[in-house]
Amino acid sequence: MGVDLVGGCKAFVAVGEAGSFTRGAALAGIPQSVASRRVSALEHHLGELLFDRSSRKAVLTPFGRDMLPSARRLVRLADAMEQDAHRARFRPLRIAVPETCTTRGLAELDSEARAHELFLEFRPAPPGERSELVRTHEVRAAVTAVPADNGVWTAPLGVAGIAAMQPGAVYLESLRVGRSGRLPRRRIWLQPEDDVPHVRDRLMRIRDSVGLLPAQVTVAESLTAATAEVLGSADLLVCSAAQAHELGMTWRGIGELRIERGFDIEAVVAEDATRIRDRLRHAVARSLGAAVAGQEAR
Figure (cartoon, rainbow, N blue to C red):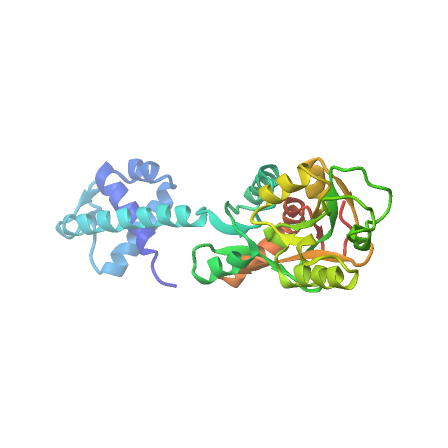
């Protein structure tokens, strides 16, 4: 086994500056016997004595005096490296998350992550941008939108509104123009998070199959804009039950089909994705208003 050069230099510098093996060991925070062994090992490695042991004091030899400045530089560099390693270890992991995540949900996720020595920094972004942020290394990881069958987390979607709703699912065909005899026609608003093929395209096919007008299923520019449309009318918002609760709306499933958001983790370094999936699986689910795939949402 090779010599512990850094440990030997730390002991050498402490003893040299204190002028005593006893005081130097105390300064270095190690037993005197350990300090003595480390200095002896360093002397053996360098091929010369660092201290004159004929005196009770730790007197530097000429060779020791010549080596002390270099040893100090090595100790300073080692200390700086340890500090850099500590900072790097606790450097925040920047992660792109859905814009639908609430401040409280992300705060709870961050709190649980800290218990696992993971420090998260969140970058809200729409689904189309999150993977791109990983590819350009602007974030280290992203919660990506995927088909529910491929997701680690899933969230069933339905429709929500402020108008009174009958119990049970809402059938989109009931929104067909002329069926209720009321104007203006009711619309279904998609928020940007659901402007993905596995959600949007399925809704559009149902829209066409039940005879709704093209403009009755519309993608809004933002969740805020979609919510404003719904709050001021009898329109409906496509969302999860958790999101409807947060917005103070009544939520119902869609009668003609079951659609779900699916989520996975993508990361620059595969180990980061694995750590998030393994250590924060349930915390991520709560922040998304979702369930771990294969488990019922609470």
